[in-house]
Length: 567
Image (tube, rainbow, N blue to C red; front, side, top):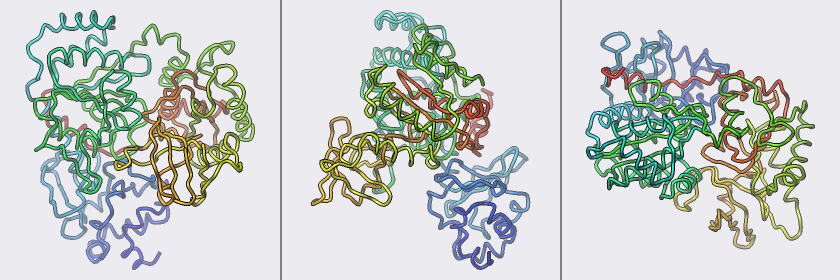
């Protein structure tokens, strides 16, 4: 690749496989004069490309950034100075010590961690840095709960709600009355929902103001259903303004609340969490609920895992599977996967979790058709489109979301004179199709992951109406890129959602995506039935592969430095 092209197109190169550009980029990074002379300075990079990839990897960059930073080599460390590269250099005073000084004129910050030099884009540096400091402030400030006989209050909550809390749940309630910030984590069947209900009941009885939130619309609705209280998306809670990419609720205009409870916290990236904690007033409590063993956020960082790893943010881990969940083969399968064991099917077909051993993709597709059209509806009474969600590890390949959606659309909603349709690029949208909103749209009040059915296609007006749980939302034909067919979707797209039934193909063609946390997340999406269809080799690979793409972050380290007395 000609050097002048690399100079001019340095930003665009972040989207090219590292195997092509590694040598060229490494040479340029080590030569001040090349970076200094580049008209396309890194400060011009769009914020969506914030997840710069390690140059050592041979993998394609992800479609969206997953990491807050990336490591730079020792030679790069010597040349990356603020006057030569567009990076802000933050050299530690001592080995392993970070600097809090940031030049706001630059877009990227670089600082020394304990094990490697990490290079941060400025917005991610500020978000991670600000998040650590704000969590520290909250943890050090007084608790809003008035003096209380905690044991008596817990017993009262049990009696008034008709509950019998497990020791771990009682410990979590005690912790919530003592700590301003608390993390509650645990797998399926461990009683997170019951605990949250008791917590809300106890705080409300003391007259405290409560706000509930979740990262997606579906997760917020589920939280509202399980608690009987209003829950909003985090963006709605923060009064996010898409036009200005800012929130009306912030440090100088905080929420009018004494307790904020966030569900599905594993989905929250570092930028959104920073915005949230800035809007939590100094006197309020923050309770973060989530399953740290699920897939991390699509956006940058691994906030829940990092806060737990810091060992300075109070954590209650629920491990006891409650009696009502012990009979669920779904719960057993999920916990087996977490422990690196192959999940067992329910015996004699009487249960809610099954694995069907099928070797090749055509046979898997045929089995999927039989399950969706005949076997599951006949035995369990599920509607094949409304109640059953097909999940898959990937978008592409024969068993990926794109091809499965084409197959299932043809199966459940084939072309017919009475079904008008519209084509948008490679996708055909047809009356009655099951579709998913794939990005947040605050004007329409629909959010990433919301599922609906196409209600009307008006060719004359070039408008499509989609029914989202009884609410009609209109889309111009030009806006249909916000929708994708949803007969099948990736496991990542299912985060924060639950379905009556889940069916998932597993094959070694998904090899790179066969990971323990992905399989675990998929299994825990099903409420009443989960069926895996595929090869035992692929299942074994997913169970045994607990390696995940490293997310470079200093959040845990920052928290440890700011709260050393608690480590």
